[in-house]
Every structure is written in C-alpha cells, then in structure tokens.
Length: 328
Image (cartoon, rainbow, N blue to C red; front, side):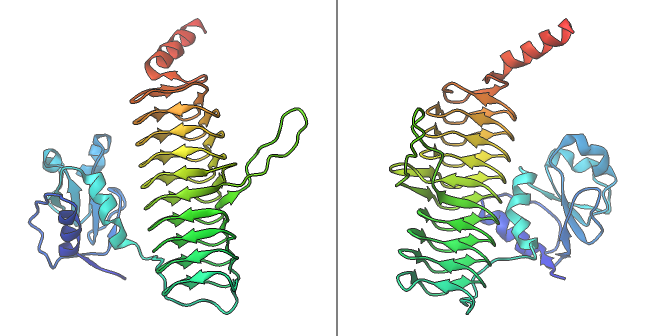
C-alpha cells in the first residue's frame, strides 16, 4: 500500500500558494484519503461543510484538513491541518493518493493499427486493438487505451490521456486533456435542410483546449464550418451532447445529460446543472449558472443564475414555485 508523507502533502499545497499550519511531523504518513465517517487512524480526512459537524466530532482519522474556526470540534485523536479552503486542498492532494495512474510507457502494441501517413512522436503508448488513421499526429507523452480509434485528421498534443473505446476524428486535442471511455468526438452533427431533409455535410472540426476533461459517452460534434470549441480547464461530465459549432469558454463545469444545440456560444466560468437543455444560436455570458433540468430558450447575460423552463432568474422561479404550491 502506498503511504504518503505529510511533507509531500505540504509541498503540494504550498506550491499552490496555500498557507498550511499543523503540528504534524514531516515524516508522518497516511495510508488513504477518506471521508469523516469512513476514515481510520491511518487516514487523512477533510471538513468543508458545516452540516457534517456531528460527524466531525466523531472522526477517527489521524489528521483532518480544516479551517481554523472549526478546529475546536476535532477530538484529540485527530490532528488539524489548518488551511483556508479544505475542499480545494483535497482536490490538489487527491492525486497523491490515486493508485491508478495513466502515464505513457512508450510502448505501441503490436495489435494496434497505425496508418503509414500518421506521425507518432516519442514516448507514446497505444494499447491493443486501437488504431491511428491517416493525417493524424500523436505528440509526446500521449496514452491511448484499448479499442480506441483516432483519426482521420486528428492532432493529439502532449500528455493527453485517452481511455478505452474512444472515437476521435477531425479534432485537435490540446495538452494535458483527458478523454474518458466511450467518448465520441468529431463526428458529423445533426444537420439537414428542413423541407427536403437534404443532409448538410460537416466539414469543420473540434478543438478541445488545454487541461480539459471529457466524460464517458459524451458526444461533441464537428462544426459545419470552422470549429466546435471547448475552452481550457473545462470539465464535462458523462453523457453530454454538444452539437456542431458550439463554443464553450474556459473553466466550464457541465454536469451529466446536458444537451447544447448548435451554434450556441457560452462564456467563461459557466456552470450547468444535470439534464439542462440549451437551444441553438444563443449567447450565454460569463459566470452564468444554469440549474439542473432548466430549459434555456433565450440569451443570458453575464453573472446570472437561472432555473426552470423556460429558464428565468432563479429568484423569480422560486417565487413562482411558492405561489403554485399555495394554489394546490
């Protein structure tokens, strides 16, 4: 079992501008990172939500990431690691405790199929029964799992992780992205002339910018012209549909089963709850939050929080819910 020293934890946090205060020895180790209720005396835990204060009082962990104002509730058996944002601290150190790592070993399986026109850089791992088609380039440090199809017309930049059963065509995947199992990127979108039903062929591509994550069985369609774009540091959950020519800004968080229709433009730092639907050709501003199961049919300006169908300011939506409940 992998043991993590406190010195390693402290180093990660301080390298991300955290002030860390604890009496724990640098040589002390932790077996695991766990919840308040499940942690043992060999584990590290975290406290970030005051509704779990009773569980905090019963914690059995060796130490706990915690704000200074809640230290008084810790039992004596658990030492505090005081930080301003315990949940962010958890996110930063979680990789240390991850026993499953995907990192290229530089081996290309003899059971893979590589086009003669594909360009494969150094230290690329391609597992069994995966293929790289024509006019594709795989850059240094890329990991490709089994049964995945890459290409045609694909560029995968450095240190990208592509899991099993992924299909990518007509796309550029930039540095440090992760594409989870079953994702379909760069296929033709849903486009036709309405009266004749004549199919509109898609000739654009998909661009996924640095450090983004695409969830399992998520579909991102190529553009009719130009590009469908996912901004940097964006996190897309499983089972999301993104149609042709959609542009999503940086730092997006999109939960499962969201559907975004074609040519909609979404700003930076947007959060979209599960099963929300967004109509086509809309403009969604920066810092917008769309509640789960909302139906967005109109443009949304910056810094708005909306809910309901049709989606509206969340305070108006709450008032309507209250009025309707009294009518019953």
